[in-house]
Each structure stands twice: as C-alpha cells, then as structure tokens.
Image 1 (tube, helix red, strand yellow):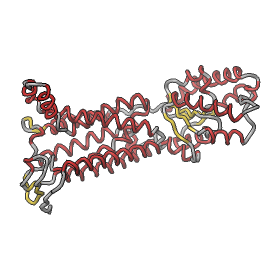
Image 2 (tube, helix red, strand yellow):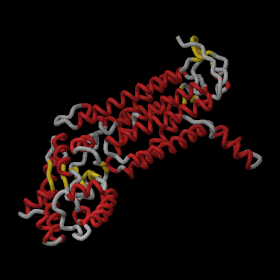
Image 3 (tube, helix red, strand yellow):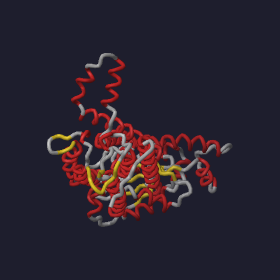
Image 4 (cartoon, helix red, strand yellow):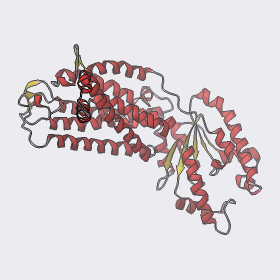
Amino acid sequence: MFPYITLFGREIAVYAIMALCGIFAAGITACRKAKLAGFDDTGMIRMLLAAGAGAFAGGHILYAAIHFRFIPFLLKAPGLDALLMRTGLLFSGQIFYGGLLGGIAAGCLYGSGKFKKTLPAVCDITSPVIPLFHFFGRIGCFGAGCCYGIEHRPGVTFFRAIIPQANFVSRLPVQLIEAGFNIFLFFLLSRIERAASLDVRRSAPGIMAHLKGKILFLYLLFYPLGRFFLEFFRGDEYRGIWGPLSTSQWISVFLVPAAVLGLVMPRKKSPGLVVLLGPKHSGKTSTGKILADLLAVPFYDLDTLVENKTGESPRALYSRGENIFRSAEYETLKAFLETTTETRSAAKRQVVLATGGGIIDNKKSVTLLSGGCLKIYLEADVETAWKRISSGPLPAFLDRENPKESHRVLHERRAKDYKAFADITVPVESKTPEETAREISVLF
C-alpha cells in the first residue's frame, strides 16, 4: 500500500536536482560505453549536448502546440512586455514526447556527420540511457507534484505541488510507476544491446543479431506501449486530451507501427572491408589478427601483400625511393581490393586489412579507401610511438641527425590526417592488442 505523503520544500528545486542527476547518469553511462566501444567520447558528449538542446526545444514546442488555442490571446498582447510574458507562458511547459523526438532528431543529425557509417552502433549505445534519464526525471516529477495520477486510495497527497490541481487529493503515484518502468527498460535494452553485439560476431549469427543497430527502434516500441497504458492513470488533463485519447497516447499510436517497421526492415549490411590505420608499431597487425579471429573472417597485412607481390620488403623498396614504395603500395592495394570484392560479396562477411604506418601520405591509396569500408585509426601518443620505433632499426624516412624530433613532427601531422580520414578512433595506450581488438569487435 502506498502511504499518504505530505511534500514540503521547494518542489521545483527537487525536479531540477533530479533532472541534473539524470543528465549526469545518462551522460556518464553513454560516454563510458562509447569509449569502451572505441568511439570518440568527446564526439559523444557533443552529440548528447545536441540531443539535449533538441529535447529542450522539442518539449517546449509540443507543449505550445497542444495549447494553440491561446495563440489569439498572444496576438492581442497590448505591448512588447505583455507579448514576451504571454509567449513565455505559452512555452512554459514541456511534453516528454516532444523532447524525445526533438532530441532524437538533433542527436542523429549531429551523429550522422560525426560518426558517419557507425551511427547505428552509436544509437545502440545511447538508446538505453534515454529511459535512464527518464527514470530520474519521473522521480523529479513526483517530487514537484507534476504529471500526477488520478484520484486513488491508497495514494499520495500533495500539498505544495507546482500544479495546484494536484494538491489536497489522494492520487495514484503514476510518476513512480513510470520511473520503475523506465529503469526496467534501461536494464532490458542494455542487456539486449550486449546480447545483439555478441550474437552478430558468431560464425552463424542468430535472431539477436538482427537487433544490432536497432535498439532505438526497440525502445520506440516498448516505451510507447507502456506509456499508452499508463496514460489511463494520469490525472493532469492540461497535457491535452483529444477525443478518447491524450496527446501522448495519440503519439504512441503512431510510434508503435513506425518502430515495428524499423525493426522488420533488413539490417544495413556491415562494411565488407575493415581497415586498420595508424602509425608504425601501433599494433595494427597483431590487433588485426585477433580481430579477424573474433569475427571469424580473413586477415591481410598490406606490407606483407606488397612483399609477396614485388619480392622485396617495404624497407628495401623505400630505400630505393619513397615514390617507388608508394607506387608498389598503391598497385598492391588496388589489386587486393579488386580480387577480394567478389569474395567479400559472396561471403557477406568482413575482411580485416592492416595498412602500413604511412599510407595516409599515399594520396592515391587513400582515395581507394575513401568509400565502401570502415576505417579505424589506432591512436598511439607520440612518446609511446617513439619508444616502439626506437627499440629497433630506425626507419629510413627519419632524419638521422635528429630522428626523435623528425618523428614527432611526422607523427603529429599524420595523426591529424588519420583522425580526419578515419571513421573511428581507438586509443591504444596501456592496452594489449587483444583488448583493442575486443573493443573494435563490439561494432559488429
């Protein structure tokens, strides 16, 4: 049985505090998962900020839209001060669905440019944190007394709710019920997202693999179904009632079939070629071999392919002139792509290719890799890279008089180009090749 509760204090502050808790919990969870998956956590923060701005705008816009009948009152304002005050009142509230749709639109718009081909994987990471944020938001609603439930005994009695109609009546704490539903969705979607990632990497993927890249659609199916039912127990009619259903129920009616359509559509085929980029001794070959084993796909090393094709090692070719080596590298890569395209298409599986450390300087080779593949940059800082390179014979392209400084200049220039060219950047500091490979394998 729910006890009778008298709420005192500054209810608006309670809502604000819980909203901030939700923002931090969702943001930290999303960034942590993004970093573990090899995504740029700074890019994730910016995507979340874009989504937050879209959610803020969308929630207020939908609130104003369902109160459109007050627009004539707005237009009749006697002066600028009155106009601004009435406009503020019109946009003073928020509707969750408006914030949800606005946040998804803004987040995906930013993510489509930042994360490119990996946006579905990023959405898989961020989708479970939506109900996590909403969990804290609904507890804040309970503390503020908004979004209240129908009259019900036993129930909760508010005395200082921000909505006067909620006060002095025993009400069903629908906010807490929805909070419980949201935290359940968070754990459920997180588990499904993990299971789908594991399943898709098997040699014979099962039904869970189909959900990879579709966790957002799954959320847009589960939440509207629950929300539609919970709306029958809401008592705050100011949110908009249209005929037999509320605003949120009508939106749920449209979202459910759209989510089902998204779920049944064939999953976008993963890139057939996974290319590992990075400086010399960043672990491309060792990481690539382990990654290929995890994905049960073939692995190739471009330097080895060059040597097999020309009969000379890359070092020997480079000693005869950089242009000679770059030409051999380009021709080998071109031949490799031509001969493996049909094989990859028939097998419908990935092929992992580790490139040479300076391929970013080979503009013709870079052009070959511009489309149709997933480019992953293994990022090592300049000091780590120098320790690895200086442990053996120094490459011919370094200045013999000051090799460390020439390496630093070259490394920093190439790092900038690699980051701009790659789809994903994966830091490799303090990680074994196996740890790095497992991070990357989460994408597939």
